[in-house]
Length: 127
Image 1 (cartoon, one colour):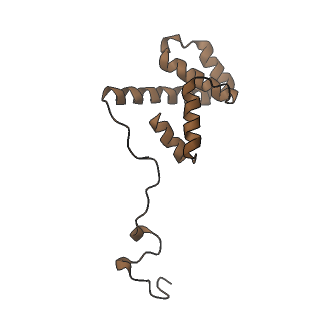
Image 2: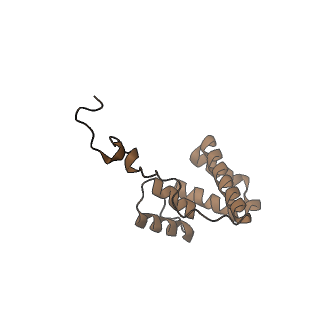
Image 3: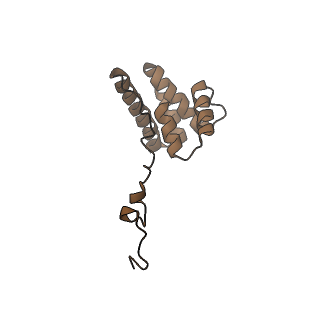
C-alpha cells in the first residue's frame, strides 16, 4: 500500500484520512464505497488473487458500470499494478522512504525574488 499512500497524499488527502482509507481498502469490505468503486475493488481483488476465475460476466459488469473505454482502463491499470508489484517483489525492491511524487521543496536561492549572497535586492531591480 506504500505507493497508494503516496498517491493519496499527492491527491491532497491528510495523513489521518489516508490511514483510514487504506484500512478500509485492505479490509475487503467495500460496502461503504459507492457501488462503482466497490465493483472495481472487487474486480481488482479477483484479478489479483484468482485471475483464472475472472469470467466474461465480471468484465461485462465493468463495461455496464463504466462503459467500454473506462472498463479497459480499469482492467489495464489493475494489471499494470499487479505486474509492477510482482517485478518489485521478485527483485526485492524496497519502497522509497520519501514520497517521490511530492513537489520538491524549493531551496531559498530557487524561490521567486531570491538574490545571490543573501544581499537584499536593490530598489527598483528587475523593473
